[in-house]
Length: 613
Ligand SMILES: Nc1ncnc2c1ncn2[C@@H]1O[C@H](COP(=O)(O)OP(=O)(O)OP(=O)(O)O)[C@@H](O)[C@H]1O
Image (cartoon, rainbow, N blue to C red; front, side, top):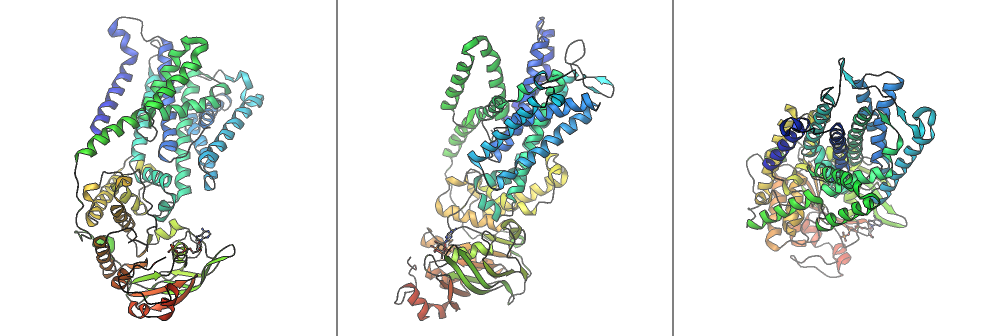
């Protein structure tokens, strides 16, 4: 949705909700009744929970079918603290957010191993266990009778009511929390945290290679989402003044998920729209008696059939499709050393030292030795090519150096430090960037966002600074945006900044992947077959880019099959065959090395030929 339109709709929503309790004064009727007012308050509370769930499902790509349990946990924490420990409202509210957030963070643990349907099943199990505990632990939770007599909330001695007689304080408090939830969601999504969540959902490997701690970011998504659910639960308990397990069953979890999906998961307005429609529909369909569930299912099926991305998601796509059809765009020249590129490339290593050293590096997959006792020295500020027939172990070697595979034996040192056991995101923070043999872009993020994800590790502002949009966060965002635009100009993709990455032609995707890797400001850049699928002209540009980067102080390891390119760009070449180094030296010497020729064909290759598989 366009920013101006969304601000306008938000203002409209706030004005409508703020004016709602007073409508009767204008139209001269008894409206809204306290029942109607409570319905709107419950709707707002559910919207808060749905916004939290949207962060988890829509942005982090993690489906939870146990969200109602976290909602219920917040409600029970608030009720129990007020009833049994005499906590004041505000303190109980705080714990109702923190305790579910901590439990939510624990729920993220299974994502280390499972995602998708398996994760959904784990969250279902959590929800079922939770409801059973509530039902069976009668002495603590009241079982089916629930917890009754929750004291009316007060702040600073002021009772918070929700009727004309008591004032509408509680109504407005819920509205303020709803606005805060909307604000936090918007700030989070448009920050490095939100980008990292989306990136990890779309390509876990690329996210890790760019320094994102995938487990950490998923834990954050779970915790934030659970915190929202807990807040909703506490607000509900203090509205109903009674809680029992029946509100928080599996069905409630499904309804919450449907609210998000119906409105449009992964859109800012989706949960609001979905909650409004589904919640109103539920009230309306109550009049249908036995046909209620049928009507409910039919409505959902119809809407999702017509609008598969949810209401907001589908409308936004329609608008986007129309807009992008209008522009005819051309790529700019690349590499285009625009002003400010020194920031990305300036490095301090002395040339002549080794940036990457491996000793006896061995990687086995069961009985297969993919890399066999490999010793290499990659000198800093040089382009070092790794070549060899298919299956020689080149990509495996890159995967070990970048932390994706753990070596079976041997050592890897980068920048003078042994790094063999470090995971990819830590190595990325140390200045190792890589591209992938099959480009791994974040396809549903824009070209600009892809490059912004590459800058993830440069941000210093923390979570609270981000959601509160404090000055350091805004300064860093501005600087990151400026650098991302500079990098897009560098690879000639400025005109595509707002295009989704998956819509780019293949050659452009390769450029974008390089720009994104450069956003990390790496000292060591690992390129895995960057010329595959490029045209002759594009390969010439790529050679100029790689040479330019090395001349400006970057160290580059290049896995490539294209002989002409290797000859043009490399300072040194290592040849692998069956995981072993069979030759190592300057390109001209390698080209005439009989072992290399033997490994490839058994006869000489001509410069300009692509080494065949
Ligand atoms: N995850 C894996 N599990 C099992 N075997 C693997 C795995 N990754 C690679 N291999 C095997 O290791 C060997 C080396 O593969 P690798 O991809 O490193 O070769 P390569 O030189 O990069 O080849 P190509 O030029 O085709 O990319 C191959 O025999 C491959 O089948």
